[in-house]
Image (tube, rainbow, N blue to C red):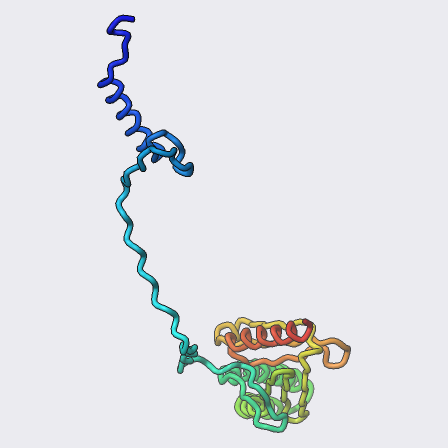
Length: 244
């Protein structure tokens, strides 16, 4: 064979070193084996190419005497709408002050209707009978003023409610007194209604519809709208807990 065909030792050595270096870069062993395989006997170990990573710092141990610290309650948090327990013979909760104005507006309309009816009746009777002027109208005006001035205050003071964890008590009536207790277990559904005047004054009426024919619907007017919605949601939550 010619000299060109013969293997050059330096070329083989250089080529071998290049291939070995390439194999060590790719697989970690001079022989080109995978890094998880043991190198053959007699072959030198691959040099470490990666820098030695420092040992991770151990985290601080959890203290054995650690205790749970409860969250400090917010001082301005509002009290619950439904108290833990209420005595049925205790003091009633008064309605929203704007409800007095609603009753007064209703009394004004009633007083105007009475006055107009008295004027019409007096004019009709005066044509047929010789009646003095104001014989019917003046008493009607006095009744109308009484309805406007005194009745709204009396009705407002006679109304109130008590609510506990399992029932609602509604008290109303001046001449005909009514005291109704509604257990939440009988409540079917709850409505919160607002008329135009109530919406303008930010009050509402909460109506509890119960099972049965007697007092199937119990209304509690004169509540602040936000309070009425909150009471409705808490009563619904109580009913849901009872049905589970």
